[in-house]
Amino acid sequence: MEREKGMTNEAFEAFYLKHYKFVYRIAYSYMKEPHDAEDVTEDVFVKVLTGSFSFESEEHERSWLALTTMNLCKDVLKSAWRKRVGSLEDLENEPESPESKAVEESDTMEAVQKLPPKYKEVIILFYYMGYKTDEIAEKLGKPPSTIRNLLADARKKLKAMIGDAR
Image (tube, rainbow, N blue to C red; front, side):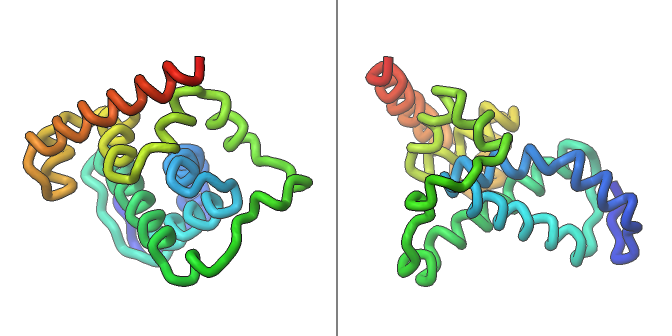
């Protein structure tokens, strides 16, 4: 998809509708709160709207969205402001979004959400995005052997977490 500053409202709306759930699921897996995931999702699409991007293919488009979402989540999670602000868990009367309910229904996704970020990132890229370990290594700037080790460790952690839950 060719992206220029002059993207029409219709083109942006189509882009947004096409990718919203994908971006939201990744954000939710990091943020663990519907409101925070919505904020990150919004920030990703603001970047798209205000930037000038040229995507080579559908795969490149999804890859950019996934990596941008993960990086924004990491930035939010490590920010000083986030550490000072309390959780929204106290607001139990707030209705959940349909996307968060769908994500929470999966035992596997719940377990993935509980993984440390270094494991969560490779699991999402490998299983949910379909990248090979060499491609993940290139995207994250790590050796392929490190990615394979992270995946192996993440699988063990997931197996223990899912096995304990049943």
